[in-house]
Length: 306
Image 1: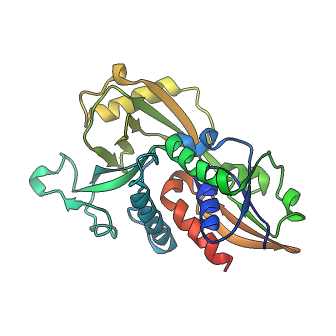
Image 2: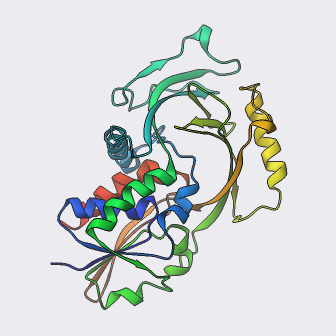
Image 3: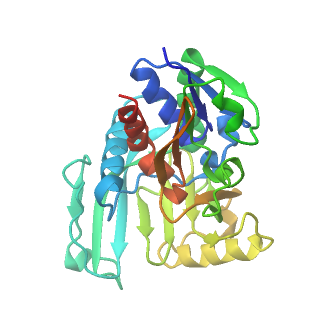
């Protein structure tokens, strides 16, 4: 049997490991952090398959179906909730309208002011820490977990037939990828406000996602930054944007400020390299769409091994 190593225990690494298990492969999972301490644990996180084409659409669809399945488990942290998505220009109905449990186009008279198009549909909302714990429990039962910080993939080449690189932003150092860059993000969390549905305006980058026991408000994406000293002003800007659509939201409703770093790249690196007797599959650079692409990319990894 082939010896397989997966590097990285965020959403990409965990989903890849589980897909490999489902297809008869045992894995050694390498990570410097517990999954709930990875960047994946600080995401918003909902599934967002709008405007995806080609392989990105394929990856998105596989993930959507997986989350719909996982939502059936009360311990998963995945819930299906309604999202109001607004657009400033006219857009076609999305490719996934017949896959999600519910979809409707908002009528002209009911569209929010200033929007050209609005869709209301049921979409997977993922509680990151809870979902990562849910996946990691399964991973831990079937695989060997190695908590170790790698300096480069050469450390694994002699011992493994296949190495799958799911290192996210860590790929900058691990494989010396100069095209990787950090994208600083900041969220406001509230456990004292009750909202029936979620909201997203991509053009204005304003959103709130209603999870099981809290609501996440955003957002900001500062390309090239891993940290910001301006978090107080960022919080004020997010609050002002959200208040335009949700007047009852204010600073007194904020229970926590959460920051994280997205693994930025112009496109996902999903490709294979060969070093002597070892195959390396790169699966990183998903930026803010890791949860949307994760299970699709994991399935593509399995296909590469057939």
